[in-house]
Image (tube, rainbow over the protein chains, first blue to last red):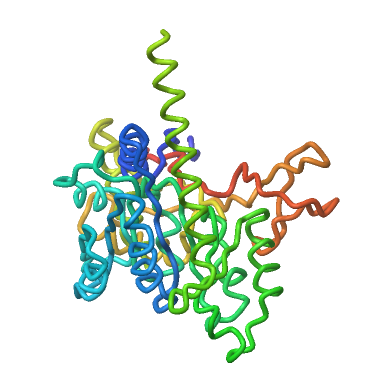
Length: 235
Length: 114
């Protein structure tokens, strides 16, 4: 008698559906010359305040817009609308993270070739968003000085999935005895070589460095596009 | 807690396969990377819930943990990390940003009823 279970070998990525949409979005961003930047952090780390300041400072130079994910309420979108750029709220209901399909849906009536920079603010959560590719070119993970220096060690997956870290509320660093060296060492431990920016969206300290980083990435994107165009026309 | 929606995707995918091949599934085998962002215990619990009322009710989810494997440029070979809080080669200490394995969230096999 054969007691061996009959095994059927398959190889299927559980998040394939999300990844396929994310890849299509990334291709679209690239084709239209739009740089998509997502923001992840715990609730209250200052994503919306950072974004409000970033939109205001970038607006004179670039065509910017933002998608904002939230479980409920449109408060964040209302706050961001004050920067007078296109903003759309994605209300996720009970879902603790954004998925690529939600970004795709939110962009349906937006013309991407009218945009240089698109920000996507994820739901405040350092766990679930790590698993979902949104098609973004850059993922920024925000960490506020009030949260403690060991956040990267507690949530290594999301820090490892990010392209750059932004330490926010740096104006409060002295008051909460924030240990910058320790925070930096912890970030490097879980994501060696990651760029780290220190900012205060309240006083503007460090915002210029961080936004320059995005501006450089956008310039790089444009150059690449030009190269691709030349290659296409040569062939 | 996104494990429930992940579990539902697993059940959907397995069921699709079961219908297509006209088989009954006793167990789903899954590779789960340490960097996948999915908590195994929560996933196992969610799987039972997700199976409820479907042809997969009563089936098992067999999870194989995949550790984080990185490439060490100094040793010039892949290494397995001992801790996800320390992306450094366990032998020479070089920083190892290049991840080879550990993000898996992959159905690898279906165990069929005889």
